[in-house]
Image (cartoon, rainbow, N blue to C red; front, side, top):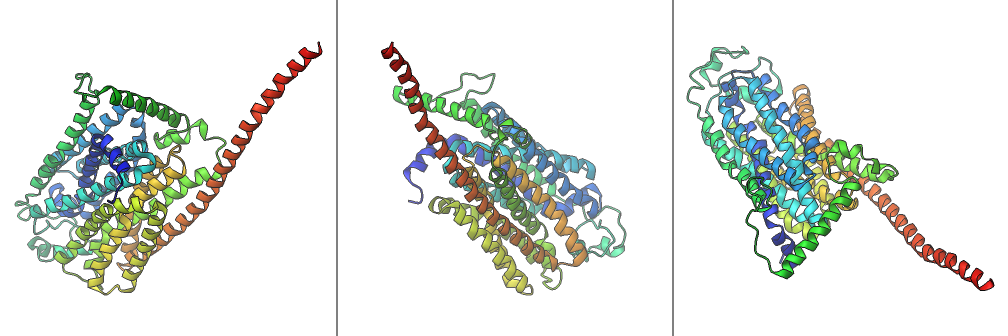
Amino acid sequence: MFVDDRIVTLFKRNAHHTLTYWSVFFSFGLCIAFLGPTILDLQCQTQSTLSQITWVFFSQQFCLLIGSSVGGVFKRTLFTALSALFVSALVISVIFAIIPLCNNVLVLAVAMAVSGLAMGVIDTIANIQLVTIYQKDSAVFLQALHFFIGFGALVSPLIADPFLSEHGCGNHTGNGTEIMHHFRNMLRHSPIAEHNITQSHLPHGGADEGSTVHYAFWIMALINLPVPLAVLFLMYRERLIPCCPNGTPNLLDKDELAMDNQQGAEGAEMEQAAHEAGGHGDIFSCCQNDNLRGLPVSFFMIHILGGMVLFMTDGIVGAYAGFVYTYAVAPPMSLPHKAAGYLASIFWAAITAGRLLSIPLSYRFPVMRLLIVNLAGAIITVLLLLIFYTSNTFLYIGTCLCGLFLSSIFPCMLAYTEDILDYQGCATSVLVTSAGMGEMVMQVLVGSIIQTAGSYSFLLCGVIMACIGFLLFMGLLFFHRMHKNYLTGTTKKSAMVEEETPGANGSSKAEPIEETQKS
């Protein structure tokens, strides 16, 4: 078997919680990938230019970062954590339902900002809850958790594809930049585009009258609706709903009930100890915790370097998913639009398959070794894409390999840093926030560089980011060793103090005895 009986027993004991947290990450994946394929239809719907509609991406990513930063606040009790997950998952369904009603780009940006906040809360809480439940065995379950992001991101474009309009409405900026090149190519044969391709605002009609993309959003809202219901059911089972305090607990015999009570007491003690040592709160409370004083430099560098590694690697994921289509349709590739459109789906499918494959691998191999292989593989793959930049075939192969290598870096890094810090730091909050920030910043940065230097710079940026990420990980390994030595020295000092204490007590007790004998 890939997984031993102990892991299976852990999963069975926490199956309901685990499956619920996995399901909310499916909502996360649905929401993160639908904007790309529907961007032209949303542009027609809001009667905006492409330069205006791209701010919708920024509003979602920026608020996702905010949600990730403050999401740890809701972890203080199980009730607040599940309540936040329920509200966030429900908000995503509501946003999907109202997107077809957003006829102004500002209203759409506000809706995407709200969905970004919900996604950020889901990202932080689900990761924290799984790490809290499984601790040193969390790597396997984190891999499965992040598989559901890829699965949701794969399903979302497939749902939208049948409802996308064949022609855009002709709204675009009049500049000749690389970044908008593929949109103009898609609109080249549109009657509206032939009428006046240099105007930034064109009359709307004809092309967008037959758009049925609103059905795609309503279908995604219905598909996502069981997720908040699953969270609500978990709250009911845990007796956390105020109107249903009794719930329907499972019948236990005396031994099982005693065991559960003992585990509950131990869990409460561990949670209290974690809270006193900093715990897994939001990133701001972690930084202000008084117990961080006196900790070694290695403790803080592990947080910083781990976050910077994910800043780079998740930045590559966001930039590649966002601009591989732009790169493929531009010279020297110049792929047909339909053929280039498959690249994003291949990339997300590879990420989904990679996270599924990483579940048994993370159990069989140390996460440090998996991280080294993934980071090195990402560098080699993007470098080969840069070398064979005129090969259409290798672009598809490289996209698949790039998705496979990048897929499990985040869950492996999360499990690795939490294990180094013995689950006493703020690694989850820091890493989730850093990953979200990297995805937001790198999309804007790479897009600006492509606009200035051309499509070839897309892969060059990928190589540079991958190399920087690998060097930062080497620095993380160095501080891991330093922190390990610090912990070893602290343990030895504690042992010496414990050995000396009985001797001191014995001598202090012996002195009164001698004085009594003398008297």
